[in-house]
Length: 445
Picture: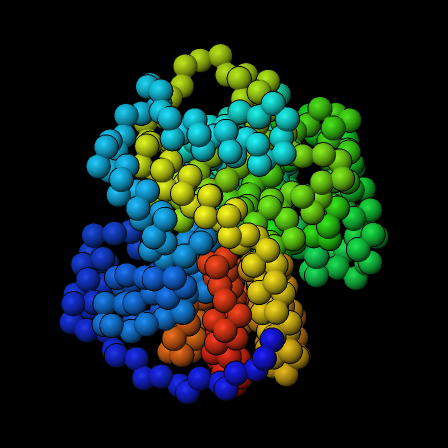
């Protein structure tokens, strides 16, 4: 990637009276635990391509995409047109009626999933998709014991919180499920960090096998191929394939949580599970976020015998509604026709090398990791392995001041910046964002 001149620091217009008033109103009527980024919270009013604008007229390069949800581009004309045309016909009718856009999108997703004899159920979010997968797995296996990964995150609902292995996002220990946590989601921390990749996988498999000897048969293992909220951490390729061999011997299901990794974001694969596909596809796959490009779409793909195991009626009032399905179809078509997976691989590869070159000169950076356009930058106090959340917040603020929006995350003893732009990111935009991030990182004292 050619190195462009580093952008000059910008002077953003400060939060105007309207934004300050909105913040005051927000605090008076919404929950205290509803997190906001930035010391002066940001109101985003509109976007185009890979850029957004705030209420004060400031323009930003968006490297977080509404938490990995704006997958293709802001205000993508193909999606806007599909939504507008569908809105002119009918917005919603529920799953009690035949729904052509829902059937068409389900057909496409079933075929793309890699799961044989697949059935698709649509929800409104990734949380609800994971809830549904848990319902299906526990009903099918007649067990309420779940295996989950340490440092994981699977949503905000009661059951999803109960299997989340990230204390910062787990507000209660109460749960309808008995959850047992397995090693392996974080490669460079924990008791096996010093091992080679092959030794790491073998140690995690031994731990899983030992664990299964001390508990009632679990229903399923749920795992993110790359842990999103946990700071874009991942195991070596092949770990979940090795896990699956152990699980399959015991009839235990594998649920791949693809809410953040799906649709080609990792570049190398269309689904994150394909990096672990030696033992075949997962039994269930959950998705959300990027498929709607901002519309509320989530869902579950499962083998027919699993999807059809429920013995009571069920519907979805808003899952699969016509307007979101129209958005999803248009967005998926654009993604495939323009090979955005390939773009994520090419541009993401250039971006990670650029960031690693910067990180080598910044003592606060412990690791730059990820693949495709799903990259994490872990920050520590220089000379230690101790997390530095203050540094993460400082970089977030400095990046914004430079005209770049990024995210942050991390689990136990970690603090990471999350970089996940729309998959249509150009080389020039990647270099521009990397230069802004370089300035923000070098500004750490």
